[in-house]
Amino acid sequence: MEHLVRVLKKDFLHYGKVQNHHAGTQLVFHLSKSLKDTEVSIHAQKAGLILEPLSKSTARDLSYNGFILGFCNYSEGELLQALTTFHSLLVELSH
Image (cartoon, rainbow, N blue to C red; front, side, top):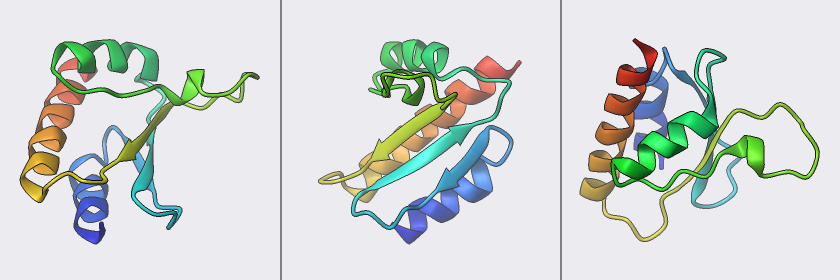
């Protein structure tokens, strides 16, 4: 988990910030305001990633913008591949 947090803090700095709640096998990644989680999730699905938008996770509008990233039962290789895809997607959507 610490490796995942380091990667997100270092390589994803321009696209948002990671928040580790120390609650098991999930992290929260808050997107920067220039990206919308609903749009990112649509493109992510086309790239083979399932990302549920935080903005759709509550009954009230709490202005959440990001994702809960779960990593239970995935190998380090699978996580790195998913992060590479996620990063490429954020780069593409930011330009």
